[in-house]
Length: 316
Image 1 (cartoon, one colour):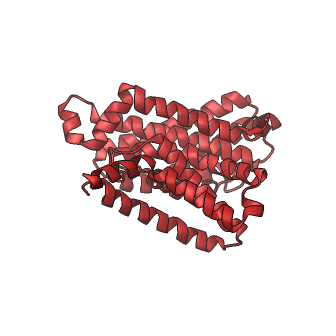
Image 2 (cartoon, rainbow, N blue to C red; image 1 turned 135 degrees about the vertical axis):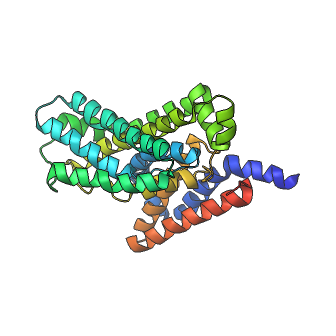
Image 3 (cartoon, rainbow, N blue to C red; image 1 turned 180 degrees about the vertical axis):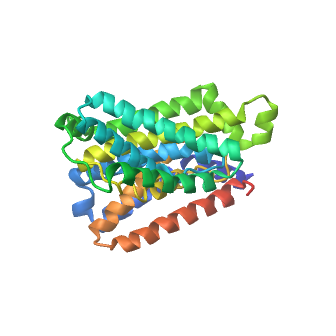
């Protein structure tokens, strides 16, 4: 009984507790740098793209799948958006067509291939990761696209009063998806599929349709992430987004989303992304090599999945 109670507390507050402990530890180790207002703002700003892409990655993982193509989707949507703006299209039209619509289309392709081939999403998105990256290199001739309008760079990556706009976008998107997962039939059905796909099918849920929708949500979020990354860089880079699939998966898993489906919360993903941002920032302050940061990231993923198995008791 006591064990079950602890498991419930851990699943609800464990990620937040870990975040607080890491913040306190880094504050003690380096109080003169870490707890400055400028540094904490940078932590949140640097975590914003991980939050955006992570809350999208949350949905495929919630149905016991995965989307490895999000980094390549970021690059391709960012490149198309930049190409449209350079060609003279209005900024808002370029963002909608190049980022949102293209992201949804690429997500649809992932979902369509998953339901039509019955292959695991790992295989499909591993393939589309390479395909989408290749398309980015082809349409850009492997060259960055510069000369983006100030209206775009300042409007997407600038500041609104004292708050970075990428942070506003990340929190607004997270808030919208919290509503979707907690207050809508769409959210309830996605959780049902993740909990037991066969039972969901027998209860009348169109599993294939919802699978496609899940990957479209992931694609749209990756597209928004690509727009924000392009604006922050001030250019569309063919290799942009490389490695962001790792950060997105890590944010979801560290945030308590079960790798085996049916369990997790958007709030947890946000906490997971902040944990990644705090750790990376702390290691930079301590002058730890980026090579070691990759070791820490891999260890966090393994540890998070192990804790999920230990406390959650989910089947493999």
